[in-house]
Length: 171
Image (cartoon, rainbow, N blue to C red; front, side):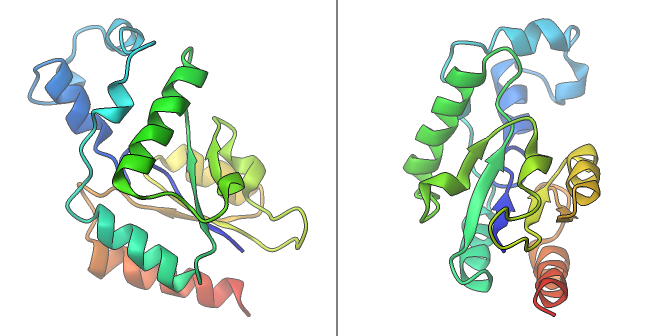
């Protein structure tokens, strides 16, 4: 069983980066989001993101509780897959959030394909801020935890939820 962390919204402040980049108070106030997001293609935008205050705590806790069987499962930007995945890897290296196994650093819009370990058939865990990613992950047999670092409390919500999920997996 592997515990996967999404990046944007979980350990990387994607929406804060969007707000800074486009000089708005809230990302939803951007007039034409499609054009704005398209303008990020072929840039190093993902390497400019801040981490959340709790990002180090999240990564360290996941490392500890998973016995270092953890990874990153993050969606690259649509239409900019290779470039955005590259800059996400650079960001992870810079933040020292690199999983012990390189194959556990996954950049895909089809996260649900990693819900089950194909060798052991054990259910993997995904911590992600997007409800649709969690729904697809769970339909594929994995255990999903919806968590958004700028809204949810790390110690009050994520810690006990992940502990419970691991108890469930290890039965």
